[in-house]
Amino acid sequence: MANRVKRLIQKLVLGASVICIMGFYCLTRTTLLATQSVSLSPCMPNVQVRNNSHRTLKDATCTPKVNLMFMKTHKTASSTLMNILLRFGEKHQLKFALPDGRNDFFYPSSFFRTQVKSYQPGLCYNVICNHMRFNAPEVEKLLPPDTVFFTILRDPADLFESSFHYYKGYMPQTWMIPGENQMEEFLKHPNRYFNPTGFNSFYLKNLQFFDFGFENNLEKDDPRVKEGIEYIEKQFQLVLLSDHFEESLILLKDALCWTMDDLVFFKLNARNATSVSRMSPELRTRAREWNGADWRLYQHFNATFWARVKAYGRSRMEEQVKELRRRNAEMEAICIDGGRAVGASDIMDRDMKPWQPIGKASILGYNLRNNIEQQYEELCRKMLTPEIQYLTNLGVNLWVTRLWGWFKDNFVRFGFS
Image (cartoon, rainbow, N blue to C red; front, side, top):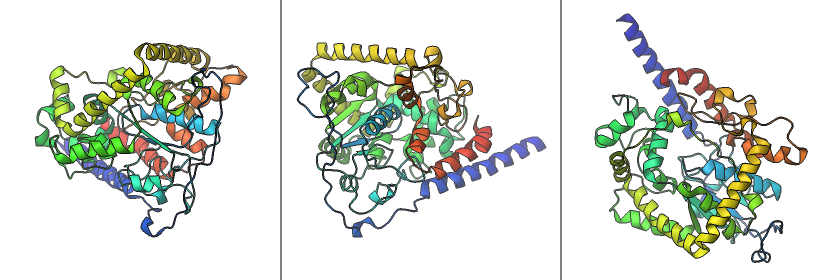
């Protein structure tokens, strides 16, 4: 009995500590200023890239787009896409608008331009691609008028499964859900467990809608959902789907006038298959109904996505996807030791270890091959480098993120594993 009381007290103390640290993490915003009073010079295009390598005759006259706003949504393969953008930006010496102190722009707070590292009025950037809660007027003031805005979505059923498991340790309202399958129990009785005002509750309902700056507790028939979808369609020239990632990259390549060399990728921030919960058709339906706004959002842009694929040409798309897979397989053989992703405990180089959620280390990473040919060495390392380390290499001081990571890895994980 005494041991049970002692363990309960330990969990309560640990829970209070987690909430305090996470509260500090979310509320740290030392550079958040009253931006309305900041003057800003017009931001104009300032870089031109001409790269005709591996370009078809049809594309030979187009110029690669370099002014890019990628709205990085959560749990949508966005880390893999971000790595592609970071490599492209470095290769062409583009100017990134990077966060300061953390690896996001003070999410879940709304984005303001003063959150950008070393921001000064009048500065103009080429690329923004870190997590944020979208705020179009503030974003637009940092970028040239010809900037291409694009983003990526995911089927809400799969996203909910991923988000629930990845962020469970960050959502106190899920800690007391009974049973072995807490996600299934939640989806069967969501109103029993969901508190819309609870800490980090946005991870549990319409997360994608929330990322775009909208209220996440709207029901699917609320007129504001339709208005939000129309707003997103107006703001973003291209909406990709993580469920069809390779096809998405080919559409992106076409829209940005890039080459296949710019698209090669390794899947980053992916979970171990054993940590992924299988969802029955019934449970998938429940997840979509619970995330009704996200489901309407996804259905709308799923339709526009396949309309783009049809316009691009399905046979042409198949050929391009096949070529991308061939190039990726080529790079895997060159770069990856063992040819596959491995668990965190099997990663030899600390700089290659990805960030892990609270609880079990479920995120996979890679080991870099030894004796890589010199011409591929730098590219291989960058393709395999996780987001936190890549941002550090770009000069971002992630002191808040690292403080939370130290606390999480040394104390919190014992209470949630």
